[in-house]
Length: 142
Length: 437
Ligand SMILES: [Zn+2]
Image 1 (cartoon, rainbow over the protein chains, first blue to last red):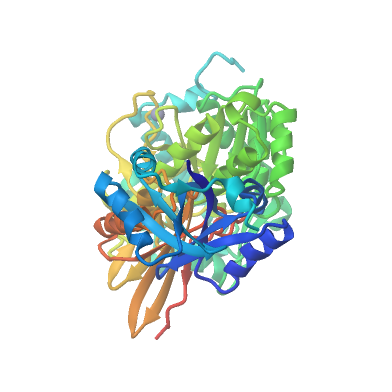
Image 2: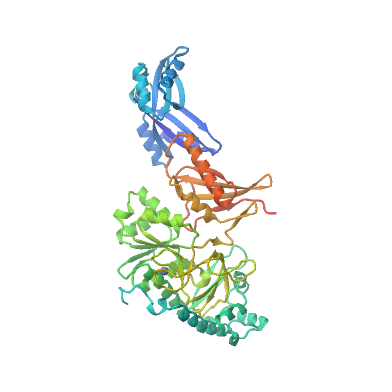
């Protein structure tokens, strides 16, 4: 029910972000969504892309500090309040969300999030009839 | 040579304390007499009114003035030698960052005695003629090269002068030649493992390595244990310095609890670095050595600037030669930050307690708003989580433990695996960018 996200440790130095993106470009990887937050000393770049396995190998081969992380991709209708409804399903089940980001594609909203309790999240998804996306679904978007 | 014997020189290694001291007095008297041939020492003796006959007991050693590195520089190149140059067969020189370099001269007898002392060390940790010894140390002027070469040959081992650097070739030698013992500086041993791992070589499965001699670079017990764990070997601390020929001054026995200093070669003193008064066994101070078997260039009460202590008591291995604790660092390596004395090895000891970190680290000292600052960059073994909370928790924990050890709070920065510079020579652990007043 989860999809693979790339997590990349980025030093707070000029050019490190571009270096990573250039490697992905060379490997022919198309980005679907990215999220970059930082602390004083470093940042973590999170990427949903067309071919996570290939992207992972391309980065690892060049010595980039990259990890594959399992996240959920939940599709919601493009209407006011649907995001709140989806999150309510998880909160009611006691699922805590480590981080979340979202984007809109083809008139649908997509929430990407990671939790430390994927089993419980999966239960909430099937109980409440939420729609999750697979990696194939996502790569068909690009 | 009896390969069953635990001793390379049974007669010297099994001396009792009174026998050691009697031998030392005899050799000290000879050495002081011989120093009369040295223009430098002749002048020194004249100035303090000392005659060789005045040395009647070992305590009379204290009547002899100290010799310092500066003395070696001032007498550059040959002014301290006790033999004419035509009797010398080798010269080693260490470059100085300031002033003249220093020169150490050797006669053939000096080279033989040096090789014998280090051969004794290698034998002591169980190396025998059937072993294959690879020396991954710089050759040339660096005494770890030729020193170990001749000593390993003296033991009768097949000896591979691999020299420093070219890590992939080093690993090929290790696997192709069946290397069982290796000499390297500790940071390079860690480097070898990293490259082996990247090449898919498991040192336990794919190599015959069993013994490592490590030295020439201050390192912590944690670093040693990590090297042993990584390479599946026993790692023994080796101590030496070019002024005392090189490696072979002191070496750990299989007890791995302190390095036996060969007291038939040296008289060891530990002195308070400020008052220069002798300290009792067990107390940390500056190591002072007097050579007893040098012909070309005997040195009397040489201040090594290495800080250590003598481990009290006798070693279970039976050797009565005193044991030096691992070097706390050189007085020159000491960082003074906000009035606190800190040795980089103290920091290393803490960092290596974190399995999430590699053994690489870099300390940067700087000035901000007229205050000293310390930044410690530590390298993640792997990027194990994308959770900021966990990474911040790790950073805080490292910072806390460092503060408990060194009493100042450094800034700690996590950096990605493999991003800190790797040196082929001695590791550079400290960068000091502070304003000098
Ligand atoms: Zn011992």
